[in-house]
Amino acid sequence: MNRFGERFTITTFGESHGKALGCIIDGVPSGVRIDEKFIQQELNRRKPGKSKLETARKEDDKVEILSGTFNGLSTGTPIMMIIFNNNQKSRDYDNIKNLFRPAHADFTYYHKYGIRDYRGGGRSSARETVARVAGGAIAKLILKSIGVEIQSGLSAVGEIEAKNYDFEYARRSKLYALDKDVEAKQEQVILDAKNSHNSVGGVVVTIAKGVPIGLGEPIYYKLDAILSEAMMSINASKAVEIGDGVLSAKLKGSENNDQITPNGFKTNHSGGILGGVSNGDDIIVKTHFKPTPSIFQPQETVTKDNKATICELKGRHDPCVAVRGSIVCEAMMALVLVDMLLLNMGRKIEHIYTIYQK
Image 1 (cartoon, rainbow, N blue to C red):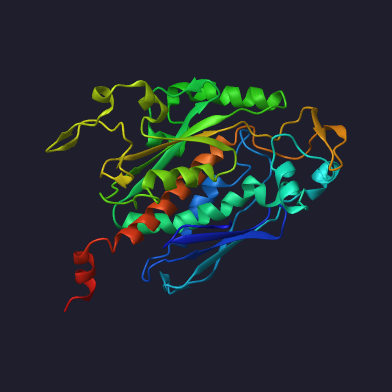
Image 2 (image 1 turned 180 degrees about the vertical axis):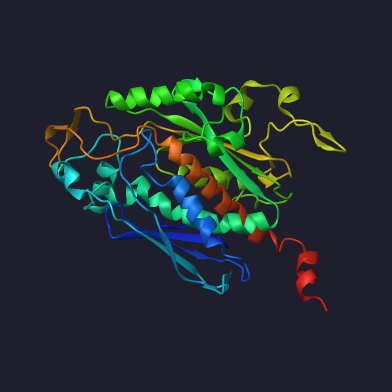
């Protein structure tokens, strides 16, 4: 599936080494101020080649809006955006066109479809996420207008974990690091992996502040369930936690319960979601990314004819995909929250009266 969402949907298209990538956003209410500068800024945060901690592939990631706006406002019709590729090196992949790269989607895509685009992985490449960030920027503009803010940052690289979270600092950090006191160690772990032709995994924390109570559609479209689906759809993500996540399984109810006072919840172990519905507290999501599978070490694999061979990769790859993955996590959370806002609008009769009762 290339479409995500129910009322507010994103459909992405394009391949890593194709002519372009892009998205169609449907369900955008009319009258939204479309800030093209902001959309480009979001893409610039995700784009590759900004530092030695990222892939050397350099792309302008210049976005063009092809439809759905007039005089700077959304018209209510689908918004189509496109980002052209301009720095492909497809020849780097000629040596792997008949074999499968370990830990990549090459093996499964070929057996599912009987054909695969071996140039950087085609649709399975993390390059596809540029379209998600463009769509997420539209969602962020809507959320900003009602006071909802989304932030993210890198909490762990390998075994080096943040002890404090500073989301404002993360936005300025080239590593998007949440803890400046461990940032240097995290950077060194990435550089060590890169210099040894290897890669390393990481963890991203994403929060949403100002989320109204009531978002989420029990029982089969719960907010936490769809957020988990959204984060797990990102390339290289392998686990998602809401609030305290797996730690909750080690606690007693007296420790895990978020007690309520007239001024709000005393704690936020739930990550802002109860019964699949937002409770007005900060929504907290932790996404775990595996090490980038593209490493420059000889590895055993097989050919399309199931013959044993050695895979030796070329090309340009992120030594830690979680770094730029943090921007994608923000985009996916924004897309989910706007979808939930629109779904929630008709859940009370007074909402309908507000618009239609004379």
